[in-house]
Image (cartoon, rainbow, N blue to C red; front, side, top):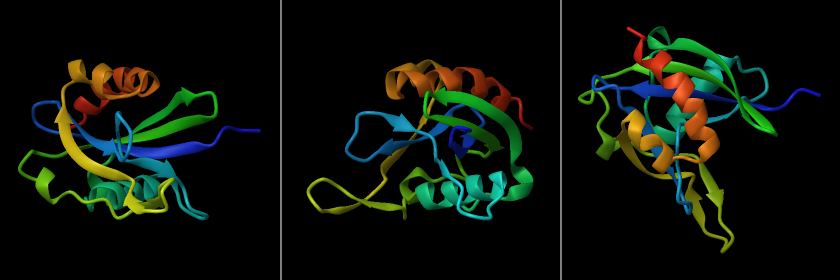
Length: 145
């Protein structure tokens, strides 16, 4: 049986920094990503996840496919990249509309903060497995014009 796949977008700015989202209630930062809904294509899933987790309505024409990446024993990633300037992405206006119920019964957003991060910062901010994927994918995302 094939592993589940999460679809995500690497949003990269003019300084080759990556947009990261802080996982609510956790230490780590992540990229906007998630599973496809029934009938969604990979690009539709990636665009929806970016919108739900950051509030960014990305233009499909700006996306470039980076491909499939091994992630965890139970999940792989299919990633896309979008180049946007820091002026186009106002971190103060990013909002997560995707909610979950925490262990105390509170409804909370999946993501609670946003930041730009350089490649050198990723190992300290992300899980080791995510940092390993980003080490491979980020140079490809930075090459997107």
